Length: 468
Image (cartoon, rainbow, N blue to C red; front, side, top):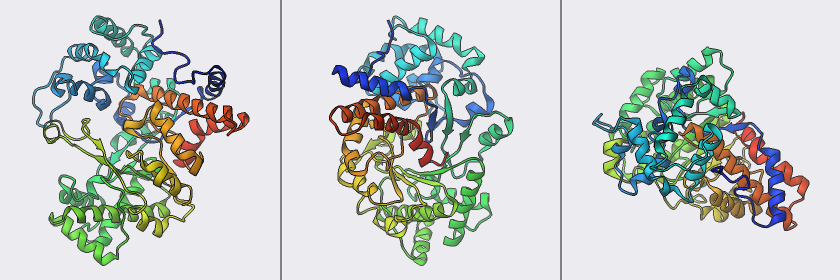
C-alpha cells in the first residue's frame, strides 16, 4: 500500500476534487524555487554522501525531534549535539529506533506527510515506520544513501530545484559558497545575508560580533557611519556570492527612523551593553529601516521574520544552543511598528520587502491591507508552525480578498531537512490548487485564470519576488 494518497489535500466533493486534480497536474512538474531556507551549503560544496538515516531525518530537524521531546525523550538521546560537547547518543541505529518507536506521535501533522512523502517517493518505502519496521526501513534508506545518485547534488537535480537559497550570518566567510562556485557544478545554490548577530544588542556577544565585523571589513564599527559602511561591505560580498536577499529575524516588527546622532548614541550604548530592552528594540528597528534603504541601493530583497519568542527554554538553550525547537509564536503589531520604515521607503516600487508572521490574526487585520496598498510590500507564505494545509488555507482565505495573489511571494520551504523540500512544495501546490478549485466552483474565479494562478503561486511569484 502506498504511504501517500494520490488525491491528498484535494476537496471531498467530486467536481471540486476533479478540478483541483487537474490544476495540480499542471503545476506538479514545475521546477522548485526554494528562495529561503537553512540547508547547509557544505553539502553541495563537498557532495559527500549523507552519513546515515538518523543524520538525514532526525538529528538536524527540530520539526522532528521537538515532538519526541514533548513526550519526554531527551534531546541527547536523539543525538542533538550539546554546546559543551558533552555526551549524546551517537549510534545512528539507536537514534532511528527511538524515532521509529515514536512515529505515531506525528499522526495528522504536516511532518508525517513530509516524512511519508520522502520515504515513499525518494526511497520506495511502502510500509509505515514503527518499532517493528525500524531496522528494515533503516537498512533500505542506508543502502540508497550509499549510492552516488543519492548524494546532495544528484538529489538537487532529482528534486527539480532551479534555485536554492541558504542563510548565513554576516560574519560567515562563505567558503562553501565559494567552493560551489569554483567547482563548475551547474546547480544554483546561493546565500542570504542574515545580520541578526550584529544588529541585535541582545544577541550573545553582540559587541564582540560588531568588532569582528569591523575587522572583517576594515571599517570603524564603533562609529555609526563606519558601522553602516561595514554592512554595505558585507552585503556586497554576499551579493558577489549570489545573494539576492537579506533576512531579519527580530522579536518584533518595530522600526525606527531616527537622526544619525541619536542612532550613533544608541550604538554606543549597545556596544557598552547598557541598552534597556526598549532601547534594544529601537536599535533593531532602526537597522530595519537602514537595511531597507541599503536594499534600494543594492537591489537585495528584504525579508522580515518577526514574532518568534526564541529559545523559550533557558535550559535547552544552555545545553543545546539556539534553534532547537523552543521558539514560540507571539502577538505582533505591524501597522504601528512598520510605519517609520514605510514612511521612509514604503512607496518605492523598486523595493521589495517580504513580510512574514507567526501571528495569524494579523493577516486580515493588518498585513493584507498593508500589502494591498504599499508598493514595497509583499506577503511571505505561511511560515514555520503554519507551513501546512490548514495554515495555507487560512492564509489564502484571510488575505486574497484584500491583497490578491500578486502581492504575495509564492512559497518557500524554510527548511534544514533537505529531503523535505519536494514534499513541502507538493503540499503547497496541492493546498493552493484545492483553494483555487473552490474559487472556481463558487464563481469567484474563471477556470482558465485558475490554471494561470496555480502556475504563478507554484513558480513565478517566488522567482519574481526574490529576483531569481
